[in-house]
Amino acid sequence: MKSILVSLIVSLMATVGLQASETITISTGEWAPYTSQNDPNGKVAETIVREAFKLEGIDVKYSYDG
Image (cartoon, rainbow, N blue to C red; front, side, top):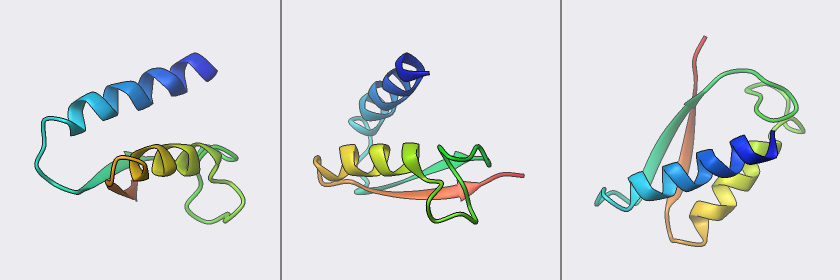
């Protein structure tokens, strides 16, 4: 699980480097406790990804599919 999350973050950061936008939208689904639209305590992965991008001055918005 850890390696998948790290791979996702690295991939997203590489992709964002090609964009001029300062905000990206990530599409996700319910997978508590890693992502959750309804549970404020169920956003572990979202928080990690949001903070990583924040260090580079990029805002992250989440869109829930499903």
